[in-house]
Image (cartoon, rainbow, N blue to C red; front, side, top):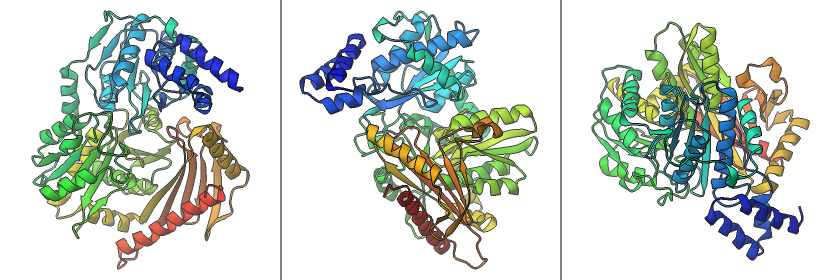
Length: 569
């Protein structure tokens, strides 16, 4: 694209952009001769996919902004009017997180739907993403939209879409919506309603119903809840919801991190608002020391994920991995679930295969899906429809969990309550979380998982990620270090022979004689991700901690070797 072309395209975009702030931002870039920045902003449309929209907020074609929200909502409305017979009577549910632009984007979404004569039910205040998903099912919505960028940095926002089944959209629906978005040439030409005749605020009764259903979900056990818990919503929207869930369950010693309790889209106390990131839980750890806590629970800003720290016998704090939390909760829920129909657990393909071993112990059905809860829940619905199984639990290693039929997406609220109950149940048995985890390792073999992410932002980064995946496909390794490669599966091939939840994906799986490796680009961030899972049986007198340290070091080395093979290191 020539320099003249990019300025012309920027001015064409500005001519249909209803946001004065975004127009001024682009005008300043033109006046300042910021041509590289203009190239980045005007080079490609912000892509709509199964994750909806996700991007940096700002003016331009590739940014998350009012114009793109309006165009996207009109495309969604056109899809619903064409595909859903009752689109003008069934509501679309709307919700938002606490980010700085979320209120403006949700208001625009509501107005565009009203302009298309589609009824709207919406949350007036910021709410967790799982509450939006819960409302979609409870209100028989034709679709739902949550304005959120989850755990991305503060400059991001997003637009997450749920289908009529209250699960996140999957192909081909995303493609059909994207086609209709592409037909919307001008955001300023989209009709918007403003009077609110077709809109209705979702009242507190639905929230009450969620907490009643959550209470019905948890195993009813005599447990010891007399211990201190520290909780942080990390400047997000989970605070009041998790505190209420813990309180109604009987936990009376819950200490919230005051500096991070209220929603604040600036996320002022953390570098990244992701509880997995180093330093994100520093304030939680300080408070835990002050109140002699035994457990730390942390949500990401939209409260659909959960991080956990537990105190070890030596008094130090251990942050559990998503896989460790997942297998502990799965074991806990399977033990309490009815055995008829056959219990079913699911996990994403990049999560630990240890779940399959635990499922065998309970004679439960286990399957893997492509990454994302959109696939876990669409698989659950497909498999339940065939009969003979009932969904109990699902998880993905990126600290996402879904228990029972409460929400057809990951839910950090219910996960927090259930993990606290798990700790209480173990205390009643005289066990710690680490001791229970070691018991599972001795029973099912020691599993360790590690992940290496290589960040490559911008259009150059996208090209580098694509080139690395192509190198892996065209020249797969025969050995990775000392480990022999047993097989290589390219998930862009052979989709017709697999169920739809394991269909085509930009993913390569490498089976080793000691475990497996998976390589894929991130769906929401400019990263290439390398996952390594290794397994080792344990001798009766072998130290679990020492074996875990050794196997983790080996897994980390394997991930680094893969990065070097792909010319990323």
